[in-house]
Image 1 (cartoon, rainbow, N blue to C red):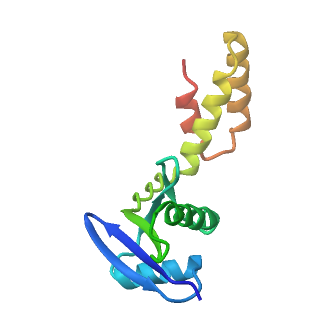
Image 2: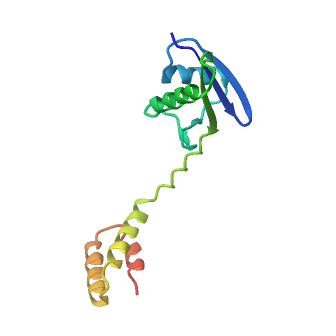
Image 3: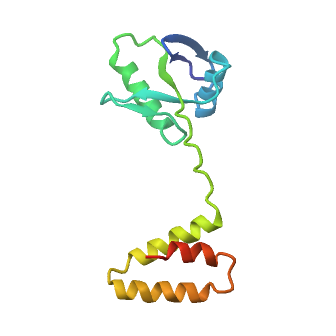
Length: 150
């Protein structure tokens, strides 16, 4: 059975948890939830051997353990428990979803983008005419006529 002390800091506050079972990613997450029960959206960081703050995730967990064990081996006292140190940071708010464009706006954007790809003015005029002819029966006809003026 492994024994470790999980030392978790969040906004300057440090809390400790004793892990008296096999150390796993899920056990560490459970311990974090026990010491900071109200904290939901966070990222956990640990410092690697190069001093970089690495994000703890299932894939990086073996590295987190290896770094922690290396730190223990570097200390003179062999009787001390394994010390696992994490810093919690608020998860960056997710970017809000851009407002959905209407079908009309999407069509206009795509047509303008397509027309902008052609540099020869005579060719642009020919394309505009073809677009307008194709839209004769469309409810967007007036919209595109206004857009294609010029």
